[in-house]
Amino acid sequence: MNRLALFIPLSLFAVLTLILLLGLDKDPTELPSALVGEPLPAFAMPSLQDPESLVTQQDFADQVVLVNVWATWCFACRIEHPSLNALAEQGVKIIGLNYKDQRKAAQLWLLERGNPYSFNIYDELGSLGIDLGVYGAPETYLVDAQGIIRHRRVGVVDKRVWEAEFAALYQELTGTTPVLGATQ
Amino acid sequence: MLVLQSQLLLANAEVVEFSDESLRPRYQQLIEELRCPKCQNQSLADSNSPISNDLRAQVQRLLEEDLSDQQIKDYLVARYSDFILYRPEVNQTTWLLWGSPLVFVLLGLLVVYRLYFKQRPSESQSHSQSQNSDQISPEDQQRLDSLLTDREPK
Image (cartoon, rainbow over all chains, first blue to last red; front, side, top):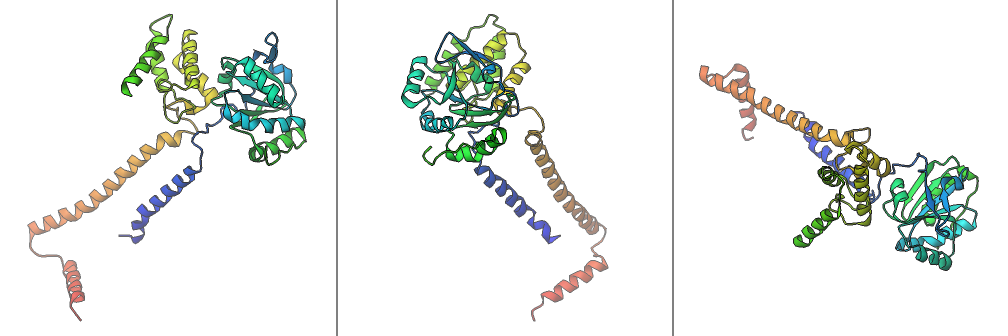
């Protein structure tokens, strides 16, 4: 019998171990994004600040924007908020999607913590959330001037995430390079 | 715990009302086959997370809007990716998932086949030889001799 054949089980085991080891690095809570490369879903929703006025995707047509899904009940959004403030100060246009929240509480939040948003979509029932495939706040989408979603981040955007996932793409789309400090 | 769970399930079942009762079995089957995107391993039927509540309500709405089961699944896959299906369709990213069990079964059969047919011929050979005569072939005799001489203590 070919002696090398005896090593087949061992090598199969080694391959399996390697695959499982690589799997350990993957975050099981992260879903593949169905909408990256697709246009942002069309919407017409009330604005957070003014219940009477409707906002649509036309309000930021031809602009590169971040769409940030947040809520006052979302603890991680507290951590993320300073980063959004810092980005807005450097000229990043951020659209808020206030997700399944209470209007009063959300307005108060923006007064207390500063308002990095150009405007906020008030998605009381989470219907735009379903269209976007939102499954947990915060989420952040980078939308290009053609209205195409170029990147999606589920979870907090901080310095590390901004540099690793957003900065290069944002630079490519706008030519500007906003930076986040270590505390943001 | 079980009692609590069954009560919750009952509560869920009671809340949902359909214009046409024939939708209910389809609804039940769909929410059992759809996976809660926030949870690690629960169907929409099992999960009480807010997102599952919303998605159950959405499934119900879509059923009332007369969409087919396939259309409802497509609707959710377009938003939440294949992750949402407990039985994802065969496509570029899932063929390995669906195909690998078949490959492993075939590999197993191959191993069984080889082990079986490697042993059988020698068995039947020796069997028939012992029937025909007690003599062993000259080659085997030679081999036996050489083995025996090798074995002798030096």
